[in-house]
Length: 228
Image 1 (tube, rainbow, N blue to C red):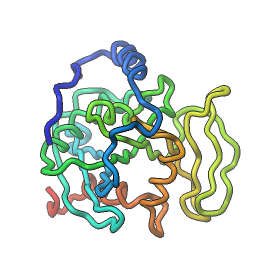
Image 2 (image 1 turned 30 degrees about the horizontal axis):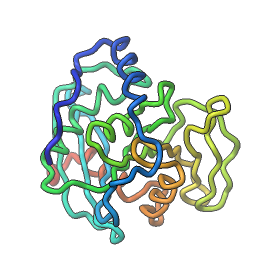
Image 3 (image 1 turned 180 degrees about the horizontal axis):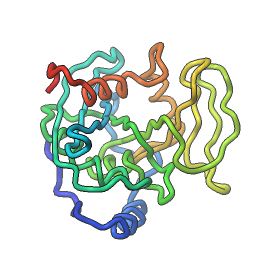
Image 4 (image 1 turned 90 degrees about the horizontal axis):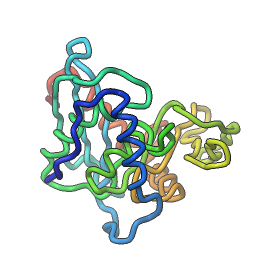
């Protein structure tokens, strides 16, 4: 999979924040015309760390849709160059994710990321960053809230409530399974909130997390060497 040369990654946190604010203006937050239809491949992205955090290990899992069966996957390891700074996750993790994406023989139609989309202080979480660089529809599927306020999500599977920053809706708090903590869903790029919710639900089985995230996490965290 070919990827255009992105911006520099060797930035200070202050420079990274300024870049996020500038790139956020380029996001498309509706179902963009020209997206491939029907969607037949959905990809999950997750990142783990090795060597006490010195090595970033990124995994991309591409699943067929609607089967949700693994079709192909890629793993990349790079030295960790950026410190852990809340709100700047993509500058620590995205270089390795892009290296893994380059290994794919096929381009997915939709990207689900373990992290935030626009539910972010500068409206530019890792799902937005990757979606913009890869020119792919992308969704943030986060396990915890980074910013915003919300009411309690309905208890039934598929119930959701808006995530607000002031009067602006920046995402949704989704109950993916009854009796479990909700997920924080937000558009990344080239997709609406309504479609983001629909696609996350379509990628769920009987677990809290969508199959895309479950496969990517398994690959990113595996220590057996089977997927190395």
